Length: 513
Image (cartoon, rainbow, N blue to C red; front, side):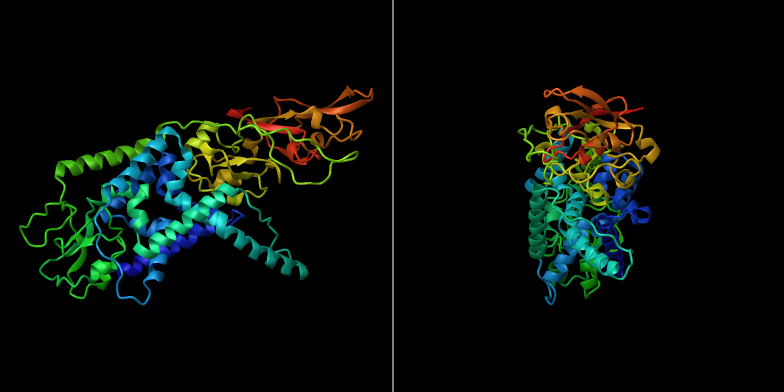
């Protein structure tokens, strides 16, 4: 029964959180958005003490049920492991804890988190990894299916669906995501929860607390017949029958496979507060592998300190490297309609609601939930090495409409604060700068344009008179920086190609009017 309850809850959580990333309309976030906020790393980065304390208490009471029920990447591994052993009586065996790898990765993760090496943090975090897998690999398929339904509905004069552009937002992120998925599948197919117990920093953090779990699987040595069936079913490879009928609770993810398969009633999930990680096989027997109590207490305190304090150290902001200048093609009239390219930006533009570039990158988990719900294709993963896979704004395909605040509604980590459309118009994330040599009017390709001024939602661009080199008086754009909010409408709608004549550069610290 315990296993059935765990499977049902895990399936519901997995499907729901996956749908959060697939739902590009943002509708489901009103009901299911809390599932993203109870993920461990987003809660730590958001300094959501309530969620952190609840998750730690849950682990202290019941073991690592977070890993087997709430974590989507963990549930995905269980699904792969189930398929790999379908029709087999048992495929796993006990393996010793690879401490140097497990704790080495954890130390590297904590150092990267404190030092602001965000690309490495995002690469190792399980929730972020699953978000990227869904956004980069599953979402395009989902959107193509939506577009087929939209085409069918349109033929029947129905607009229940609308088409969604499907495009590759970042090749480096796509490659990293694909490699991550392949690695996780291989590890889960061959050895079950190897990723969780050797690589995942969240699993290692929770392992400091799961050693003290009040309720846990316990082996009754008097009933155990050493059939090894529980050991063969343990996807965490943490049950050692020959070594003293003991369980490594730091690696146990409470899947309850062992209990469900024990034919002799030797395994029970029961109250066992105060027991050490290895359970003695006979009354009075001492397990030599058990850690002393004071050492366990130190591990407990260290884990608590790291979980609660690691997010408080600010990360470093990084600007985008410079690009080579690009010349406009075409003679006379508007430039040829060719795809736009991202211009050089002195400072990356982070979303409305992020208080500064540093604050945004400090808290962002690179899960790309905001990217999935952005209706204007403004947000995409950064290609900058220090902030690889973390979102940034760019305006080649659209601009950030003043009435849209979807990204601020879905961010679970506090990187984007929740704001209203009214507040957004008072939030300045950047300012527009004009490159006269690219302006079609200024360089003599057309006699008048004014597209940027017409579409500026805050009236920050005015057309002023200027005498060109050919002696003709024309009206060219001028930016009032005190009004500009950095929405990118001017850059997006500028007809110059492939680089717009007006470029938005971000502010390191965002301003509020």
